[in-house]
Amino acid sequence: MSSTSSIRLLLNGAPVAINGLRPQTTLLEYLREERRLTGTKEGCAEGDCGACTVVLAELTGARLAWKPVNACIRLLPSVDGKAVFTVESLRAPDGLLHPAQRALIDCHGSQCGFCTPGFAMSLFGLYKNAHRPDRGAVDDALSGNLCRCTGYLPILAAAQRMYDIDTMAGWRGPGINADGSRCESSEEKSIAAQLAALTRAHPFEYAAEGQRWIAPQTIVELADACLTRPDAQIVAGATDVGLWVTKQQRDLGDIIYTGDCAELQVIANTCSHLEIGAAVTLTDACAALDAEWPELHEAWIRFGSVPIRNSGTLGGNVANGSPIGDSMPALMALGATIVLRQGDEQREMPLDDYYLDYRKTVCKPGEFVVTLRVPHRHDRLLLRAYKIAKRFDQDISAVFACFALTLDDGLDDGRIAQARIGCGGVAPIPKRAKATETLFEGRRWDDATAEAAAISLAQEFAPIGDMRASAGYRRAMLANLLRRFRVETAAPAVAVRVHAAVTIMV
Ligand SMILES: Cc1cc2nc3c(=O)[nH]c(=O)nc-3n(C[C@H](O)[C@H](O)[C@H](O)COP(=O)(O)OP(=O)(O)OC[C@H]3O[C@@H](n4cnc5c(N)ncnc54)[C@H](O)[C@@H]3O)c2cc1C
Ligand code: FES
Ligand code: FES
Picture 1 (cartoon, protein in one colour):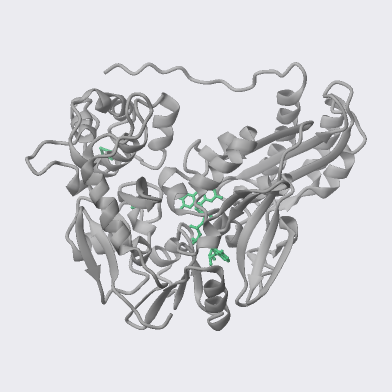
Picture 2 (picture 1 turned 90 degrees about the horizontal axis):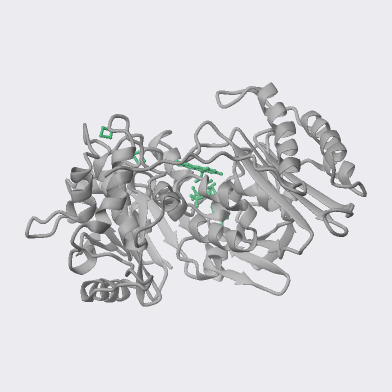
């Protein structure tokens, strides 16, 4: 693992080798400053606005997976071995605009135009991944793009309109046929073959200007790298770490990248639990969790945006240990455990025991997160997760609460055998509400129990007030979310959600 190599990728279809740029250079800096591909914009430089959206094509098996990501916080060496497509590549060589671009024009989806390249790339990502998606899927695909002047309806209309425009040939064509099968052009097969040729037989190491990027391919190599360089910065999707670079101008020092480590990419269903490797992207982790616990679906689609979830990982969220991280309260309520490794030693513990204090965990020097294990669900589980934030999409939680009740018997007569409540945004760490949990046990799931628990929950934490919410609001939210949980899980359940019906005129 000592010899270094260039960063190798395909940029808008052409092979590129990069040397001499510090490993913590962002993909956006490279595109704009080194390649003068200035169609990709810098708006916020923190993953929020989507002006910098590019689409990565990655090899999964023999095929390409198309993933919109935020170039502003993506570290350049992490796209080694991938194909990067920027807005400059969307128009065909003969000048024909891509259906995503044509539709934005036809639907008047651009005014000042600053956000438009990012929207075009998110639409292109959607075009490759869905055939005539429904409104919910369109909203989700555009959840990471902000527009301050056009307004969203023309852009949403463009997302529908692009499927009515004549398709293009080659990699620009749609990714999914009308019957749901995947289309794959010979050009895409050629890109896949070129990426296969870039696959590395040995771990990728890259160095420039005194900084080193180390990308182990196996867990043994990763453990060894972390042990020999305990001060190196572990990086996964960089959706947290990227902001330390762009907003705090931090020097990360040497970087150990987990994204190439095979064992950390595994999602496995054992007889007792679902196992999600630390470097599994949030997109894939949320899909796996969603399949078994569909009650959590809304929480996952409100986690960042599609580009954030395409880069960010579950392990990164958990290891970062933010008190307002969304996955941990849900994982705690589900009874998840975390597996850590230092050298040859591996240990497993309940996720609630992992956090010591504000952004302090039990991790020792050179120790890293291997995987999260979530016990399989059983029937008699009542489960809900609620995120309180100022926006529906792409916003950090003020409060997050996940309630999991295990009933002894049927819902009508059953008493509560076990309660687990995971909370975020109300303490220095993500935390279970253990005092309130005990109050449930042996009681019936009825209005009286819910009210007693709501009062207890509001008193169990002493949250701070900040720009997201006051302390009093947070406490009130905890109690009200528990009441809402009761209303939504009482028999018969009461509908508490109002969905807006919007018709888009094209
Ligand atoms: C625009 C935007 C929106 C966001 N929205 C949300 C949201 O809605 N909810 C939410 O919870 N978070 C949100 N985040 C935060 C972030 O996306 C998540 O915390 C994400 O899961 C971090 O994963 P990552 O792979 O990008 O971690 P990185 O940034 O790569 O790393 C984060 C930390 O984890 C450590 N780390 C990573 N992997 C390991 C490992 N295997 N072992 C030990 N340490 C490790 C790193 O050293 C670092 O300290 C948002 C971020 C942005 C920029
Ligand atoms: S510049 Fe705003 S998300 Fe990247
Ligand atoms: S068109 Fe101006 S920000 Fe979207």
